Image 1 (spheres, rainbow, N blue to C red):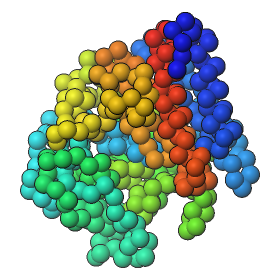
Image 2: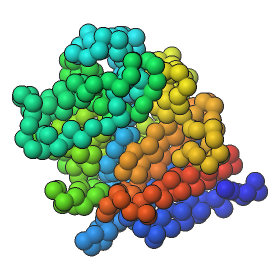
Image 3: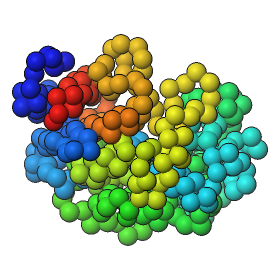
Image 4: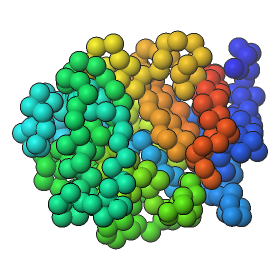
Length: 374
């Protein structure tokens, strides 16, 4: 952690050094960070798009990362907040209005991981084997399988982080708004100027990236994964889902963070401040860190991926399995973003697990830098 006497220009090189050390230690081949508030920001890019089978090109401001579960707040939750802001949807609406699910599940339950679904199921194995369960296409099969997964508990009684719940939520948003998730994403990206934020539709036309994307895992079935989603369930379902699939370069993620860090107090894009504040503060179940589409930092020292210095009040964020993270302090309009490919070339490595150390170090340095005025 930074010393109280450290000046901003003494802290900034330490952020760069943390990224460089992570790359040298094999945590990832690429790391990018942005730290800012409403006055400005500082950004860093280090490493290459891949380490195997040979080093890829150096990353830069246009390099897209697989955001993994940052899809949940940046796409699915943001779309939900937009539809609620425009009164096209209500957080207390019953999901059964649009989907064949338990009658007690609400939109808020799905956003707050309190619908009762289990955390994960390997639905991709059935789809990759050609079993679509009678569905017309893999995307419909994924959603149908997720919705049909038996609940582990009654809705609203407890929160369990669930990809299945967000797959279901993505389908609900599509039916409520009468458009695909990829089309609905533009409700968020267009007003905020996120021109390079996109899903990679494996069943349709793929986007053209402005720079080579960062590679993720070397998969026995797919080879070295680059430019298509790493998450197996999302991949099996065609690359567009409520829980994963979003790609973006650092400037877009930083712009989203900057906007959302002020959204509870100022109208941003199509988002009503009261709706954003409710999603940042309300929980869908008792005794949980989860809010509606967002997590909050753990109060236990040494536990939170946000680090120990990041505030616990008025703070929300999210992690992504590929090595991404985003934290907001919406009382002060501050944010910190870290993008890596820690699953490269494989997720099951001791080095990959050290992403928590990097996240905590960057979080503590980010807070020190912001406290000293960038």
